[in-house]
Image (cartoon, rainbow, N blue to C red; front, top):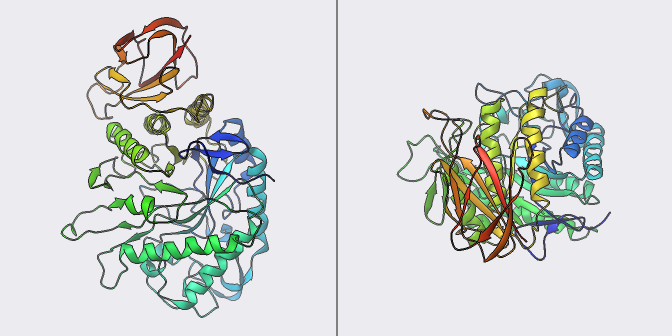
Length: 495
């Protein structure tokens, strides 16, 4: 094995994997490929490789319940199908009706599936974000966790769900640390692994005695240090992804039904190599508020999404991963897929990385549906192929290149001034707008260095290119765009 994926030495917003610059892009299954026994991960990874989908997330311990908004998925296995790191032993029952866990006995089936998945992903060129822990959100989800005292034989403390991501309980903390050390050792040999400490950590719950976000961050810091310490005596070092704890409530805003997600500390005060952000309606950065759309409500909010992405790109040094963008993921149709296509292209042109949950992938449907294969999964192939055809190391988001574009569009530009420019134009009208989905037409005015440029246009849904024409570069080069539906890429290459 070569060196594990790392930050690109010439462009710190990119990753370097097997000698090539990489943008992480995926509509991924819902993270249960190992823990959900019926899931045939071989089919999923073969399809990912064929679609040039180069990234996936993997939960190892957490499982959850479906609800009317959050669809059935691989992260919600039936109890007999859940494969945990620990063995179940008779005769007493856990809260899910199956045998309790013995935390002193590791589960061979789990580790066989873990190595099988990661090894095949390595062979397929798919990078795996291994998620060690997750917020447990509520009592009914905490009741599914092997580390809940009611589910094991090992005399752990009985605690409320919101204290799981703290260091308050010595017995629980010891088991968490032992689990992390084992996973880190098991996966050290692979070059396609990054670790995420915790999915969606949160604090400041409006409950007496609940931990603050700062207390949860202290637990995150300790877990980051533990991974680094464990790898210090092993052959390889892997990147650590993550975010700071969000706040369920802020002083003076206790009645808001929202969470407050910050990013400043994750970038500047925590030892992450890359920062993951879960785009939501109440993002806070550098004292500003960004509304990126409500959870699973199919709100595009593309201008805010672009501006937030660019602020992080230009003001921070670490890579930004839009991790689990669920703005429209419950809509398993062209409506939801189109919203995520637009946000994925906007993220990539903003110098970020992007994934969202493709709920069309499930047990016995590991490559999605026929419709999702023709749509979102093929659309991501076009995006990945295009991005990885660029000079990513020298390319940058170009904030001031576009002077004018059609009124309904949000523009994102990427390229190398004086060389190659690309402009992604996306119709930003929301789905309830009277004229939503109407074709777009108009002119693009772009600032180009003097010279001749070959110009052609890419259709992000088909991957097809228009015939090229020649334009002369100037401070206000005008291009009449072909009529298009939803989005278009205009590429300018200096002759």
